[in-house]
Amino acid sequence: MAIMEISIIPIGTKTTSVSKYVASAVKIIKHHGLKYKLCPMGTIIEGDIEQLFNIAEVMHESVFREGATRVVTNIKIDDRRDKKSSMEQKIKSVIKKI
Image (cartoon, rainbow, N blue to C red; front, side, top):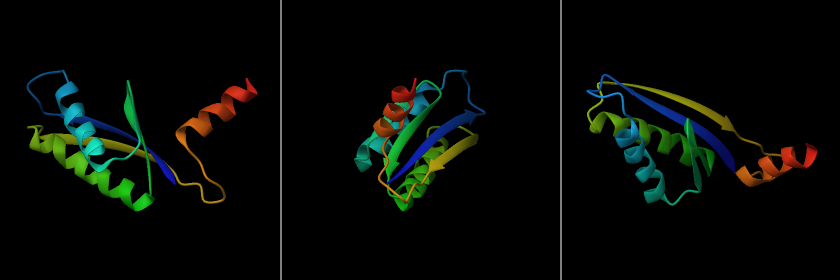
């Protein structure tokens, strides 16, 4: 299972607040039933790599549908194939070493 961090930045809106746009994008994750964690500067999602690429595109487009005239989307993907990985496992591994 892959883990993706996605940050979608709407530009060209009438306000500096972006929560409306973020909420629209997060609703898409919920609709697809993927495990996710909302963070202050982005969202972490677990899923098959194909699912993650597809959902990133749908999330990106949703911000345009909400009225943004320009959207910048940053994506980081951790696709480990030698063993199972999860958000929780990655955090536990680091905490264990502190």
